[in-house]
Image (cartoon, rainbow, N blue to C red; front, side, top):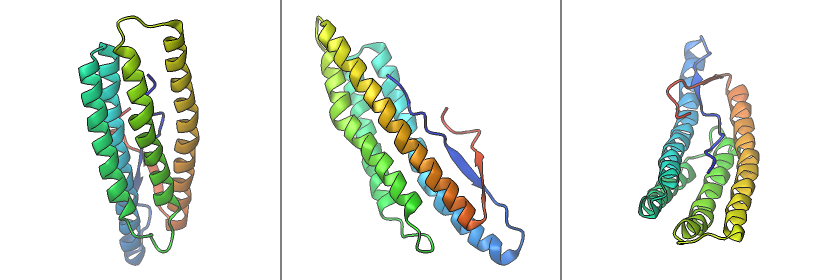
Length: 170
């Protein structure tokens, strides 16, 4: 199972003037609120990945259930964000990424867990899991790239600098 390749970044303030500082602080808080939701999802994905590695279908299902709850919370909180100075690109891009994670967790991970639960797996099962993982990786890369692009555009528009968060989940 492949973990999220998403690059998680936080914002460093780059404005010097007091008026710009307030706006930059607001933009930073807006960015970070979305990124914190992404980090929560990635943490739960890592937990689910460890469950898959263990082969314990009970742990897999518990991890999937926890991940779904985290994603639902992230979608609710991100969806409740007002546009920042009229802009919705970053928020909407994050929502698309989170909705993708939800669909994967709800359907694809359930299908994979069902395969893990079989006493004997066929080559067809192995191929199906490989195909699902390949599709997920490709789709996730595109959505993650779109989110990063929207985040970079937001940062440029707000005059703030993105820096990688050293404390982020790798």
